[in-house]
Length: 324
Image (cartoon, rainbow, N blue to C red; front, side, top):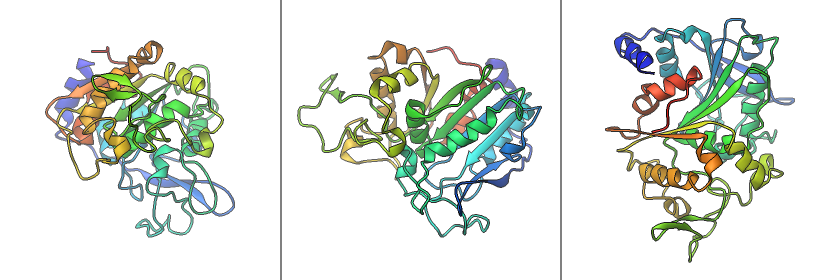
């Protein structure tokens, strides 16, 4: 891990340019799923050994949100073995990208973060988009050397990844391992009604309205997750390795969720991160599949907290960091 980070430090001042194009997959009669990648995912590659599915943040995906990540990867020794795919969960018909205007699936501003259905007629879950991309990657004829898939996101993308880890329908293929990386989300998915109140985890005496509703809890999930039981969700979380990262100065920001249900999880992102780490410890099998990394000295900065993190960079190549 130290070797990877040391190499990264020597080249970060001269990052090579890496180009990605906008591609699409059919999603019904008239709409398409758009994503950014070095090549079309269905084309396959005999050279790709690792894949990252990067989930963008609140600003949307009309332009490639993984530009800096691609540059970081290109600077690493095995970077050419990585395929980076960034799906676009657009929330408005007024898209800047002309290729997307007529055909892009759209989601509501909030619901795409939790697997909600598209808003313009097709009813496709945002989680189903990742399912589809992973099915392409898991095709042994297309990617015979692929051995590790990391699903990762920061901020709103971190919200998406944390929930997808709980309910996502990952295609299985012998020889492929999955991992997840959740960067500084504004809220977390709790799997029961307990929250940290008065020094311990308990059901709040005066619960906030809808505090345990989907995205913060399991009540009223989207259609994608309707048939998934709590037991299956816990089984998923207890078998899917997840790295959580947050800067210790991530204590504010205009995009912080300040709804009563979110505030019940903590005062700010870093507070919620530390509380959620304690919450996972209530479930030993789940806790065994997690690693929480605090990045000292930084706030809500995906480059410093994730793209410059040796733990995150190592996990792209299947190297799980030791738990602190």
